[in-house]
Image (cartoon, rainbow, N blue to C red; front, side):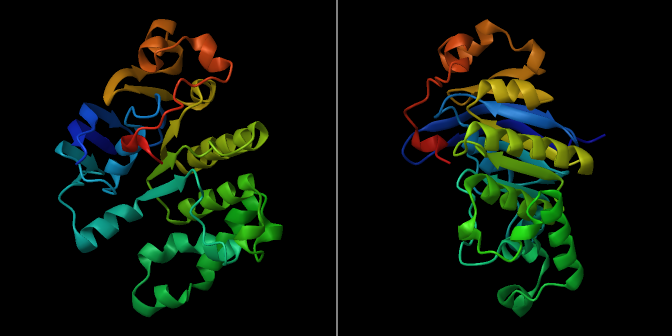
Amino acid sequence: MEPLLQFDHVSKRYPNGVHALKDVSFQMAEGEFISVIGPSGSGKSTLLRAINRLIPVSGGSVRLDGQEVSGQRGRGLRQLRRQVGMIFQNYNLVYSLSVLQNVLHGRLGYMKGLKGVLGLYREEDKQKGLELLRELGLEDFAYNRASDLSGGQKQRVGIARAIMQEPKLLLCDEPIASLDPSSAKTIMDLLRNMTRKRNIACIVNLHQLDVALKYSTRIIGLSQGEIVFDGAPEQLDDATIERIYGTSRENLMLGGSGDEQRDTADCA
C-alpha cells in the first residue's frame, strides 16, 4: 500500500542562509499519530509547512496521497490542501465571528465563488458543525463570539474547524504551547481520540517530551534539520534524547526545554 505521506531527501534552505531541513526522508501511513520533537531551530515547523506547500522545499520530493506536492499550482494545490487540516499555536480564529462560523470555515475549500465569500453554507454543513462542537463540549458556545473563549476553548474550535475539512492528514504546530497543563491534556486527548475515531493521520510538533512519549504511536526527533530518531516512543533512549536536545531527559521533564532561543527557520 502506498504511504499517505512520503518525504524523499527533502532539504530547505532559507534566503538568509539557514539550512532548516537536510536530506529528510520518512514515510507515514494512514491513521498514524506522529510527534515531531526537537529544540527550536531544529526544523519542526519547516517540515510541517512543507507538507501542504506553505513553504516550498529547496530539494527532494514531498508526496501526499500519491501526488507530488511541489508540482501543484492553482486548483491542484487547493484540492490537495483540502486533504490537510492545520491547527496552530495561536489558534488563527476570526475573533469577530461566532464559534460556529469559525468552524464552518473548514468548508471554504469546497465552496465556489460568492457562496464562500458570503458564507452561504449548506444546512448539512451547519448541522455537522454543531455536532462537532457538541463532541468537543462547546455546543453552548456555538453562537458566542470566538473572542469570548478561553485559550483551551479556542484551540478546540481550531480542532473542529480542521475536522470540518474531512482531511486525511492533520498538522498541529505546537498546539498546546500557549495552554496551561490541564487544557493541554484536554487538547491532546481530543486530538488523539478524534483522529483515531476517524482514521485521520496526525503530525504534532511538540516541545514537551513527556507529552510526545505519552500520546504518539511514533516519534521523529530532529536536530539541526536532520532526523536523528524515527521510531516507537519506547525505543527513545536517554542517549538519543541528549543528542536531540543537547541536554538530559531529567532536565526536559523538569520543565526545561533547552530551546529558549527561537531560530527564524522554526518560528510558528
